[in-house]
Length: 244
Image 1: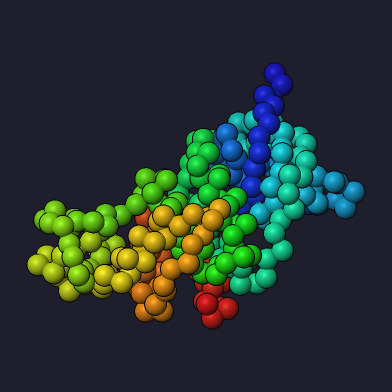
Image 2 (image 1 turned 45 degrees about the vertical axis):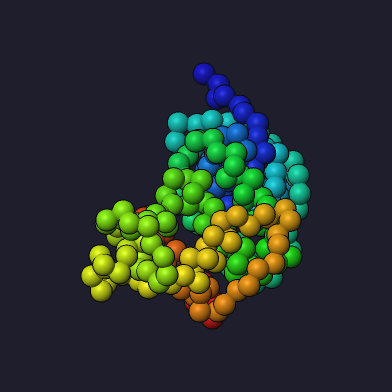
């Protein structure tokens, strides 16, 4: 029985060599969600499709569905990958790795696809650190992993002023409930979170950024994501090596 062929627009999240002449890739597609696939023969220089399979390329692909892994039939270029410098590439890799970790295979989420495409495009025009953080905030919401930001997860009381954040409990902890092990989550960092959640990637408007708030929010979100996926993020180690 022949394999089913399907067509979709995709953004490539990850590529690595596979066996002697092939490539293994993970993409996120408009209509089929996350799809890992094999591009057979893609490492041969004469293979046109193989040259297109590179991180953050936008492609129109035809894939054979398989029992274990799908495989590439054909692909055409929609848009060349953005020319990212090392800093932009590092933050794009964070977005890609978190997306891969938080999404299920073949679960359509067109809003996630649109978020990825617009985020990568914005990385080259705006502060990549803020773009990546905003993308992660939005991604947590779209995938159903968003922590509780508005009330205390213990008592349900609406919180104001400086509060705390529990990675394990997944949300805010008020001053009355905190036990001393939670992360500080002050009002400035929460205000920044609100700004990043509503940031329009197609028409981003400027807002005030304080370094302390940015570092605090990064610490909270990265620790929360690592706790949710239960494994370290390689892209965060790369950021650390770059001193970012």
